[in-house]
Image (tube, rainbow, N blue to C red; front, side, top):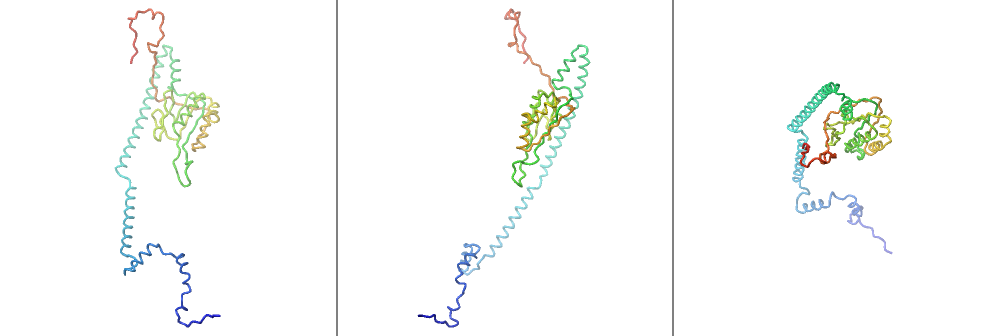
Length: 309
């Protein structure tokens, strides 16, 4: 039986690194920054150069600093408001405010002149007995203010986005012209006698439109919240706005888009006169007018009255 022979001290075999068998494991657990960098460093060492290029490192650092400074200056410049643009915006705002003030003054003048005309008409109609007919026509056309019981509906824009992700503000939902149209039509159908939106009386010729982000009623812009006042039977109007089709629509607006609405019955409401009233006259065309026997007996050469074009 062979026995291992003892080796003399200083023999290279006796002084082998005990961790040599761990080289593969160390290479797996402690790899270099990147194999490519390690290969490049070995190539530079083989050529008699230093493992890294110090000059290029400083050049890269300086380039990165210069680019960062350039981007910072660019962002600061873009955020700085343009004086010319700001001045133009201020001038536009001043012109809009001046036009609105002029429009309000003209509206007050029209209201005063209309009151003078009404007084003159009443004085003239006292002698003809047509005052009652004129008053009824003004009532139907919205030319006079009304007061009586009714309801008040307030529609507000959403305070938070309903479909926004956590941490994302999103875009808030707004009340649209269609929403106001449906509310107003529901009130008319429930028997409302007079309706006003933000103090603007609605007549048979009124229009509710949507222009950009603003709601226009009779060419006047409205701002939220939108207050709709309707004179009529409070019970019938409130029933339509709570349990009727209009109430179901308002409930869906609140549930899906966060557009809240409030319905409050009022014992006494005041709805002013319409601001945009115009006189219109309708006539039956001559060719469609029924003819009497006397007209049938007239010769064909008899001239007929022509309608103005």
